[in-house]
Length: 82
Image 1 (cartoon, rainbow, N blue to C red):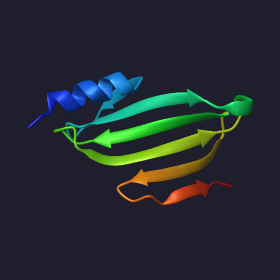
Image 2 (image 1 turned 180 degrees about the horizontal axis):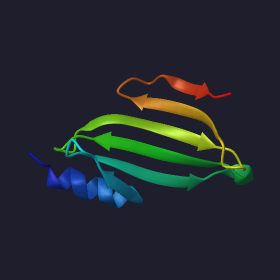
Image 3 (image 1 turned 120 degrees about the vertical axis):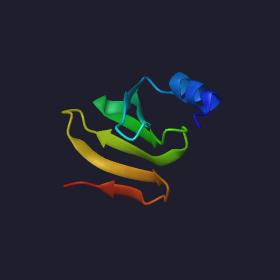
Image 4 (image 1 turned 90 degrees about the vertical axis):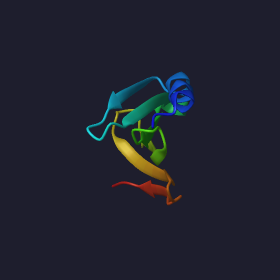
């Protein structure tokens, strides 16, 4: 059952979202960083808006992804990419 309160909160916190084939959504929030870098926060929820995954992707000034930080369901810390 869809939790409309959670959906409204997610829609307020995130810039955009995509509908997923399982009835859930992938929310996205982009944040400008220092020195031209940027971070993108991504949150995947199921059809009832329960969080399944939450992570951050960090991009350098050229737009290349340089690290990923998985935060939920388990905090795996920052993983630097080659």
